[in-house]
Image 1 (tube, rainbow, N blue to C red):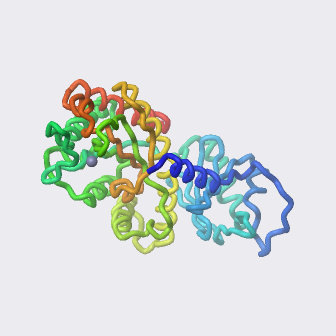
Image 2: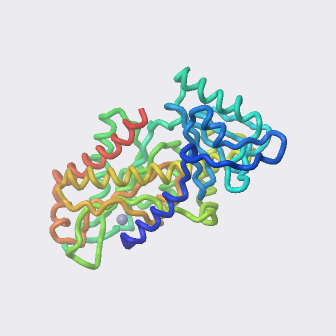
Image 3: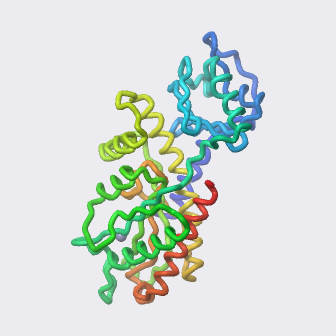
Length: 347
Ligand SMILES: [Zn+2]
């Protein structure tokens, strides 16, 4: 993808996020007995709020506590707690309106929770899925001297696993040997394991042999229609089984999956940027930066997910370096640093 396109996408995304308490304007009173403007409630209670208009997710923050809700839903999530409102949250003339019980059920609760410091609502990272690309009958990219991507990335993933385990992380591998695992299988592992982060390791190839460096991908923002793709549904079912939700609560399922989606988009992008920087510094190569793409392994997980391209097998110099175990260890260290920065921010 061209850099300019990426910038455009980011600009569109950024403009879609409206920061709540920044502006005040005179508005007509809300129709309906008990609806109130969310902006007014937030302002009078010192709560920062955001409305992500693509996913329709509304996020409220008070100190270290966070609550999330969705337009047209009467459910609010605060940490592990699910709050039911008397009526759905609505979009009225370009503003967000909430029912009367929002104040005591959500706002007061949010402020109390902060005082009690029981739960901050930001998911902690406990379990990480490492996905070594390709394997078995699928060699991935092949260098001029015959280096196969599948072997290089498995070795890096195994080194990475060791480093992360030494730092106390719970690590699950999608493959731990030279075996073929279909793409659906890889993301299903992430959901079945109730993991918090998905990191896929790959090596690049380009028709231009001179191209080299490290790049990290996160999922390209999805249109609503592709967000209800069949495979994603299957993974959601697995995920919700883990969250032990009743199967008939379809409304709750939708809101939770959309929230995870919104959360995933923002977090994956930050993680990708930091990881590209950490890895390229570690191995002193070019930082090609964070990019977005529509990769299957990134699309079909509801947790933050990134795909690291550790170097180009099509570049003779990088092919040689990737065959060096010290170099692969450094790559693993760089990826681990990126992951641990992300983990520590959520402690
Ligand atoms: Zn690959």
